[in-house]
Amino acid sequence: MAYSSTTEMSPEGDKERAGIQSVEVGFALLDVLAQASGPLMLRDLASAAGMSAAKAHRYLVSFQRLSLVVQDANTRYELGPATLRLGLATLSRLDAVKLARERLPTLMDQTGHTLALAVWGNRGPTLVHWQEAPLAMPVSLRLGDVMPLLSSATGRCFAAFMGHGGAADKAQPMIEAELALARKLGRSDLPSTAAQVQAMNTETRAQGLGRVVNVLLPGISGFCAPVFDADGHLAMGVVSLGSTATLDTDWAGPVAQALRGFAAQLSSDLGWTSV
Image (cartoon, rainbow, N blue to C red; front, side, top):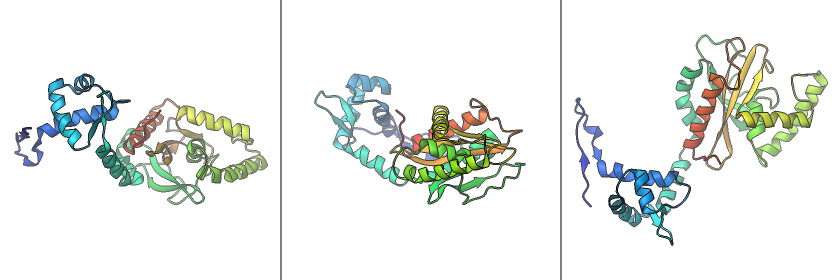
C-alpha cells in the first residue's frame, strides 16, 4: 500500500507538522470502532468513517495483520488485541491528579472560584491540591486537610459515589460518628439519621455533585464533582468553593455545569465509560 506524506508547510515553514496522511485517514476507522457499541459490517464502518468500502478494506487488511482489528464469524470488524494492549499501557501511565492539575487553569477561568482536588486517604477525603482564585475570600482549608463526609461538598461527593466495599466500608464508621456528633450538637443543617444520609446521597447522585451552602464554614459554599477511573471507581473529587455571596450555588448554575463537564471529560480520558 502506498503511503502519502502530508509535507505541505505552513506559511512559517513548520516542518514538524509534516506527517503520514494515510495514517491519519486510517485512524478514522479505528476511532469509529472504538466508539461503536459492537462489531460493524464493512459498509457501515466505511460510511461512518467517511470513505468508500474499497478504500476502508485496504486499511483494514493492514490493521488485521497488525492485530489492531479482527473479524468475527459474521465477517464484522472489531478492535483487536493490539488495541487492547495499547489502551492498557496508556491507562497504566495516566496520573489522574497530574492530569487534573494541568487542566485546572481552564476550569478556573470558567468558574472564577478557588479549586481543589481531593482523593481518599487513610482518614477520609483528603485535599491534595489547592488553587486559590485571585481576590478569593480567605478559607481556612489547606493541603492535607481531611474533609468531613456529611458537612463538606467533598465528603458528600465521596459518600455518594464510592460504591461498596473497600473505602466505602471504612467510611461507614466515620459517617456514624459524624451522625452522633450532629445529633449531639443539634445541627439541623446536617443529616442526623441513616435515612437522611441515604436521602442526601440520592440527591447527590441525581445531581452528579456534592454541595454545601454555609454548612462547613460560615459564608462559604461549594461543589464537588466525582472523577471515575477506567474501572468505574471514584478516583478523585474536583472541588470549587467560594463566598456564598458570589458563588452561584444553583444546581443548574454555571459553576455546577462547568464542574460536571470538567469531571466528565477527565473521567472519559481516564478510560471510564458511563452506562
